[in-house]
Length: 202
Figure 1 (cartoon, helix red, strand yellow):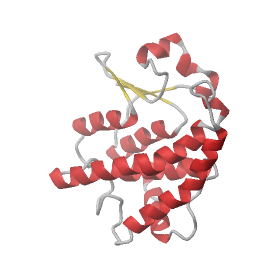
Figure 2 (tube, rainbow, N blue to C red):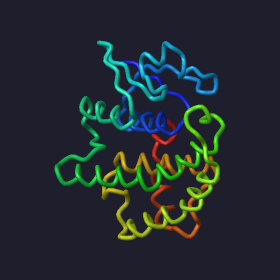
Figure 3 (tube, helix red, strand yellow):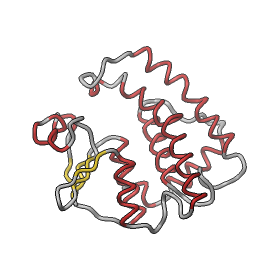
């Protein structure tokens, strides 16, 4: 296998996932600042010109960070980062989706509509980026209330892909000046647990 990745939150999600699994896959660094994701060679792998991309030994291509993680989970089921039984799998799916839509997507919109690197990808609306920035504290406050029951991780007692998604959202938010409010102690305690894991430095 070969993983095409680079800077950005989705590549980071896959790297953290692989680190948690102890998976080592040869990597090809794709420099977005140089437009390497828009070359004809790369567009043959992913017509959307986005990373990460996993290329299997037989040439099969898998794109989208969660799809890549699901494939790796099937090959390496332990530790189970998508849940180990029907109930935990349902809860992890629910919480990962919530984290993607409510937090990751909101912060991602700040990046998409304010960073010059994405100007060729879509029509940017800086005012929309600011409305999304204003929405971030309420998104984290919602999660703070949800995990006020004392559970150590977002989907329950076990670390999961939902923690990866939300943790990387926090990382991206800090980069774009959309930090977690200091008053949200439950979220800060959770994030501290996540950031202390060796995989955070993947």
